[in-house]
Length: 251
Image 1 (tube, one colour):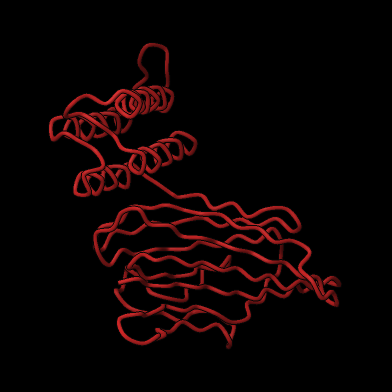
Image 2 (cartoon, one colour):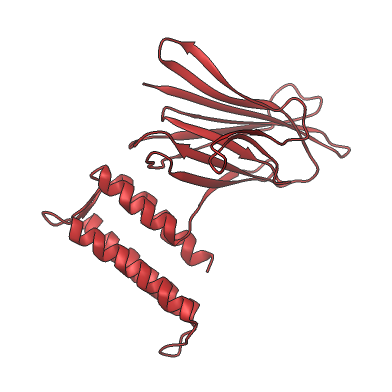
């Protein structure tokens, strides 16, 4: 069943120069969305409460289910959102409703300055998460006026392990022994880091970064030169590399 998702946010600058920023997200995967504003206010499906929340101060920001006929359904979030400062920083929380692979989320953004007919800036990007039922992926969305929008997947070690497990269910990584070794390595890295002891002249954080870098090299090797029963396919490699690079960069 194909599902279509679209998010539209109109942001009006509270300065002399007014901007209308339209952000769109659409996907064919079976998932719910929640938008988290710069203020932390949430609108959409919150996996924490397993329901829809409406916290925005904007009276026009709405979230609803749109039946398109037959089995086609779209989850919609749209309205006007007041923005007090730029760059624009928000979060998009995606919750999986079924085990899915080969999915794409496309974000589009169009910026209009007040009084101009055509967009001053138009950008888009494609995200490719893998999701299981109830699995949550969070993206930080950062937009700089007249430049670009950057979507960064937020990941911690438990997210990395969850993505490995989902990839295994989707036959995107194998075998069972290799997966168990990866999970064990992650748990050992975090356990040693938690002890807070320096080793080989490295601080706990430096040592953990070094070991995560080695873990990524191990995954890359299986991706580039898969053995008969130990492999990492493209979809899994992209997600796991993204996770590890985020963990290393935010340690």
